[in-house]
Length: 458
Image (tube, rainbow, N blue to C red; front, side, top):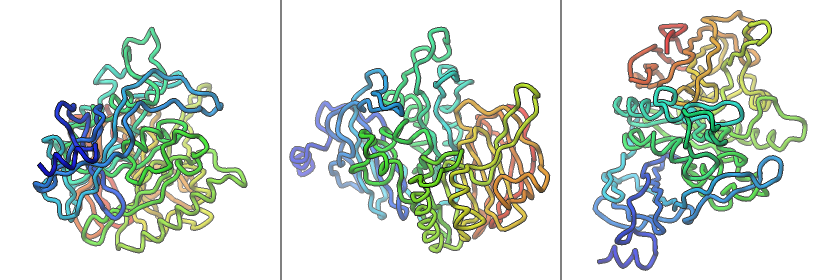
């Protein structure tokens, strides 16, 4: 009776006849606080049950379709009409032992996270001249990858960014993506993320890092409505005049027990070309660095999480000569962070987890640099230009970062896992889409080494 009365007063609890939520999941945010989220096509939020007590969820974003906003040319960008949904949330108490939304049990945080899945770059690419066969589970296997990762039974999932990829309509002569939703509305978010990720969303809480596909000019409206752990007020990305605020968020720490933590920082709006003098992003990312430094002092062992690699290589092939050229880490961040510290990240950071490059990669360095892992290989069309098994000392991904060991897997879909073995040590497994082991690595503090330098086969 009390729950029903509360629902009637607030207008936020599930009412008779309301549809079941489209998705319900748990995000881990600042200081490890857990947030239950639900997305529903109904016009009222579902009720949430926490240890037997029923209460209404709060509205995060009002019911409605995501509105069209201006593109980078200043004109209202095109897009099909999209399903109207309501985004809801509830902050979970640390003591919560059982949480349900509309009868669905949600996975809860643990005092210590020992088994962690790392994935990234998960959507199906439809943009420009690059069109992935989203209807083909072999060409776009994210649902299979997510199910395999869920079967590993993680305590926590870390997504290193780029959730939303279906920006342009599928060409009429491309049957592999025929009928795919496109644009920036909820239907794309459902197809690119919520539907294929369901098994993994049900398996464990998630840390969500923001990628360049989630800037305000791209999928930022959905990012703020559905996934960002920060309060959304004034940062919906609907109004381009607010982009200077909505395109940046403060870093935050997630304690994982045993004197260790993740530090998540938002690199979404950086530029691989670097920044010109006076660019506001220099100040924004300088502030990010200083806040990461302060957070890093809270724990003995810190692992940073962002979308753009700082200490990794990508590769491209010259169309005329067929020669392979390696390109280094993101210039915008490398230049800005490098002006503050030659090692780029503050001294307390031992490992950096990133995505953005569509492959799996590991690098460890002779000087005092963090190990870099790139896990952008869970669903988006993969890079196919191979990386070498090793590089010469003068071939560096960032100034001064002399490579000691490196490993990579090109043109293979899968996920990475980290299992904690000590205070600052981890056993890493690179899994293929079926969950089979393709490579293993060991992390010890800032150093890492893998069993295989180049994984072959898809």
